[in-house]
Image: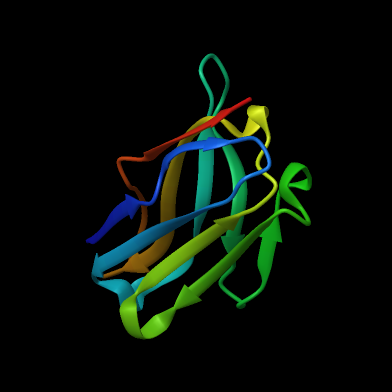
Length: 119
């Protein structure tokens, strides 16, 4: 199993910045990809940014140029630097990982961290 714990959410004014962290523990060597999703009230969960199994990064169009995903392999932690935040970035941000362990695929989610952008 892999456990994910997010932190770093909070209240920020439009135009401001936040950095989210996702600490992974457990069978982290079995991870193929890891990234961030978000879900705003009344909306579907959507991809924000993620590391692919080939080491590439993938960003949603609505965050390109504003958000940056990075990772510290020694700490098993993935970060999401969010700059130039907009009101519409308000959502619960979830860390997600997929991989394969003992011949079975897995897909784990963290509990999420709230990001609220105010005017």
